[in-house]
Length: 231
Image 1 (spheres, one colour):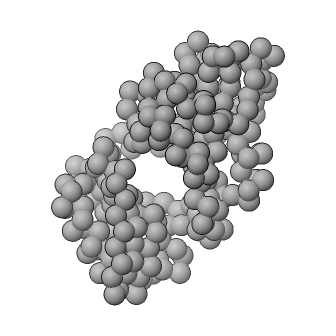
Image 2 (spheres, one colour; image 1 turned 30 degrees about the vertical axis):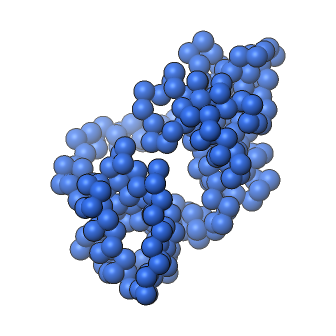
């Protein structure tokens, strides 16, 4: 996704243009004038015909941002190096703001949260789990292309996956001999010590074994804590 960096008198900002999902994601910002920053983001979204702006802000900055255009959609603890991140969103398309399945989604979420948080999966003896390396990227790209009909990042490209590894993202894989069975990743922002667990995929021949659960648990308990990351 294209990255735009702007450094002005009243603000500096780094954003990603997610043209596939028609949105702007703000990665970093500093501002003495939140209104000027908001004006820039709205103009940028209009220029690229994007429908949504996602702006995570720090707790100390939250009262400074006017709410006439942006609304608070959620909060993630530890998002900014241990401090909370508050996700402000602006919708440039009225239809984008509507959710026709909100009530059903809330019911599904409640059902998931109420479900007992236990799992008894163990890695079958004929499978092996390890940290992914560059030579795994062709098989990973092939797995992602078979599992995902669409995806917001180019995980079908081995070069993209190799670049992600080189910048420090963590990938774990499960193999059955020389055949890739499953993969998952922690995309890491090292400046803020945060990680997003993502890129979870299991080949259809290996589903029902809890492999994604095992991969995510391993990332949670091992790879991420070792690097003092917030999930």
